[in-house]
Length: 417
Image (cartoon, rainbow, N blue to C red; front, side):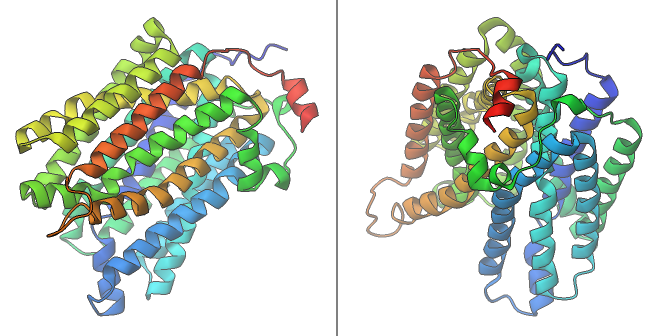
């Protein structure tokens, strides 16, 4: 039987993109009000930053633990049930947080959010199922564009709704997730044929077992390292961007929010419009390296920018960083069988989660020794320059990787496991 995916249904692709948009928007919509809800539940402004950080860490830990499990479940039972159950669970989770009577219920909600948002692994696997290898980068670019759209719209909408009540954004997020579930229930077909499914195994589904898949092929492990370095550098923004913009240029929330919206819009344009044509002309590997190189250039320009105008200008070359993620995903999917796509995406998500834990700590520490009266590092933009060097190293590694195009045989891969 041919392993070439059947022509994708437009409605299915629309659902996958809509789900990605609504999921990210639902998560982003609560970001502006979570600190306020913590204050409401504790009755104090003390340790809000600590509690907020712990809630973020809980979410990241659950992503690390559950992403491979969710991905392996989709390899066993199909993508459709896993995606729909996860989206429905996310809606119920937001309802739980909207009604949370105390901080412990809110923490439980964040734990469940980390579990249910692990459905992203099945979303990426679904796209690999329905897209032929030469079109996967474009498909992942569209998902990335949907993520960016949700990243822009979510916090803006959450800020507006938060003016009504601190809990209204949670109700809205639940509503968006519920709509996504109902839409998918009607239009989403299964993408993984029964004969291509793999028996569930805890040996593969636990995060450390899933990571072993990334070591099963030399180029796969190299691409996984590139993926880690990309995520590691990207978390610079969540760690120090706001502090850096405030300390160096005196920016407040309005300026930072506007620039984030610009970044999101540019990223959405690059991933949604450019990935397909560029990969068709240059191929996945070259496009990936170009994206990483432009990301390194943009970060270096941000760190060295003497004025805020130059800092804003650096956003434009860094936007081409968006070429890298879809092409890394595409190259990796070509190195595993159809029955391992979910496990691969779970392993990838775990790699991103590890970077999400380590990177903010690292760049936060770098920034803390770059400011003050007697900084250890004399240049305030040191964190940006280090992140640029990380991406430069990823570009060099990416150039060496991704050359062989052979896909492992399904029978051989299944026998190996």
